[in-house]
Length: 233
Image (cartoon, rainbow, N blue to C red; front, top):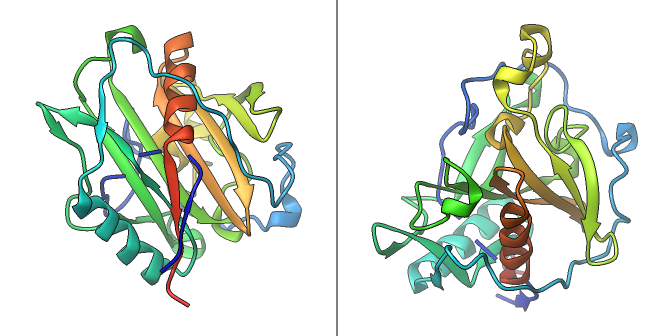
């Protein structure tokens, strides 16, 4: 197993239906990479940004068990997964995957598996707002939604544009008709600031609830603390 160190955070979920605000409808065909019009960064680039987290967010060294879970996920999914070297704590305990780092999202034609790390109610983070929630995910581009979060508004980039930033609306800001179009599990990022990049046919996402400068700062810190763990040869 080869580990490529370059950037950070991962918990498990069985089915992603909208971790921050309500459920979502998962139905309809998956968009192909050629159909995307969201201004994704060039394929084959990798972020290298690094910054310190907000002062009220404490990140701990990731436990060894998390790396094992990441390796298992990479072997199962067949592509490199973003494994954190730094993680938030929940009640003083560094957050890791519960059981598996493999999630399932979508429904019918869009049903697929992905790498998913989701941490809610972590210690500190008052500067992020009333909700402390972050997520890191990776899925094949052919399974990714046309836009990394539904209705996301572009908000610049990180690392000379290698990572694109979106501000994702809360679920209650969407009409029922719009919410019904969320078909790939992207409702998990409702109300988040989100950074994403494409590499080797895989879309990588780091998102943090809230749209403050602290949310963006934490996204940059997590990206800088991720290691890509390859599947076995």
